[in-house]
Image (cartoon, rainbow, N blue to C red; front, side, top):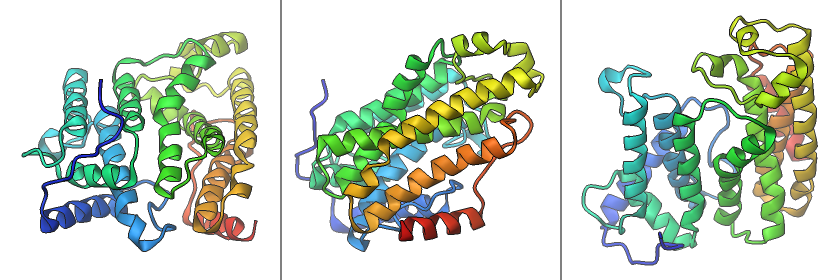
Length: 303
C-alpha cells in the first residue's frame, strides 16, 4: 500500500527543481484547455498548482488522446495496452522516492509540492485509476457507475485545489465534490458526439433504454426527440448537483472564491448552452469562447 504523503527530504538540487517547476508551468500555460490554470492564485502558489496540473494533464492525455509521448507526433497511435503501460509507469514514478534517478521532471516538481503542502497520495492514485478506467471501459450501465467515475476523475481535483490553498475542512471538500462532479457531467453531455468517435458513451445504458435511445441512433447522429429528452433529463439532474455545491463559494474568500465561482459558472453555462441548442450535442458541440470567459470572470467578481 502506498504511504499517505511524501515526507522524505528531496535530494534534488535547487537548479534542477526550478527547471522542473518551469516545465510544469510551460505545460499549464500552453495546453489547449479553456480554463486558465493558476492565474487566480498567489504568485508563490502558482508553481505548486502547475505541478499538480501537469501531472493530471499528462496522465489524461495518455489515457484519452494518445498524443502525450506518442510516436511521430501523431495522435491516437497508442494501443490500449500501451496506454495502460504508460499509465502504470506514471503511477510508478508517482510512488517512487523523491530524487529517484530518471524521473520525469513533472515528478521532480510534484514530489516537492506533495511534501511541502502535505498532500495525500490517495487523491493522485484515484485520478490515475480513473484514467486507466477510461482506457478499458467504454460503456456505463447506470448513473451510480458514472458518479463513481466522477468521484475519482473529478473530485480529487477540487479537493487538491482546496488543499493547495490550505483549506482542509471536510465539509467544504464535500461541497467541492458536487461542483467537480457537476463539471465532469456537463463535459460528458457537451461531448457526446466527440466521445462517440472514440466508441465511448457516458450516457447511462438504463437511461438510454428508458428514453428509447439506441446505440445505432447515436452513431447515426440522430438528435431526435428521444435524444433531446434524454439530454434534458441529464442536464436537469446535473444542475441539481451543481446547486448542491453552490454554497462553497459563499464560504471561501479572496481569489480562491473567484476561481471556484468561475468553475461553477463555467459548468452551468455549458448546461445553458446545451439547452439553447435544444439539447442537440450530437451534431454541434457547445463551448465557451473568449467572450464567455470574460463574462464569467466579471460575474464571479461581482457575485
